[in-house]
Amino acid sequence: MKTVIFACVHNAGRSQMAAAFFNTLSDPQKARGVSAGTQPGPRIHPEVQAVMTEVGIDLSGAQPKLLTDELAEGAHWLITMGCGDACPYVPGLKRDDWPLEDPKGKSLERVRQIRDDVRARVVKLIAQEGWAP
Figure (cartoon, one colour):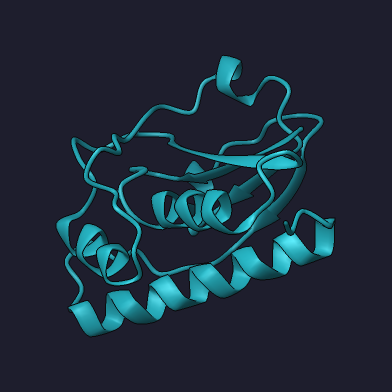
């Protein structure tokens, strides 16, 4: 079982979408996704919840959480998302950075575009690593 950490600053948008798509689209026997942030916000952005509901993914129970050493322990990948200098470095993990725009406060149209970009990147990662069902 491989673990992929999706990290952004507030863990209230991009990383939540990525982990949700990952866990929906990958084989749960092969890999799982978790999301975390370096400075977690108080809640998932409402516009992110709305556009994820449109594609059948309910984030109403999701809560932003801090990226800790314990969470990173045993992970295989760290995917950071547009957090710049605030992006964490975790030794020993495969790493990629997805330069995605923060969806906070954006129009639903723009958040849908970001959501679709996140989904495409997740699909590519799952295929690349052989984690499809």
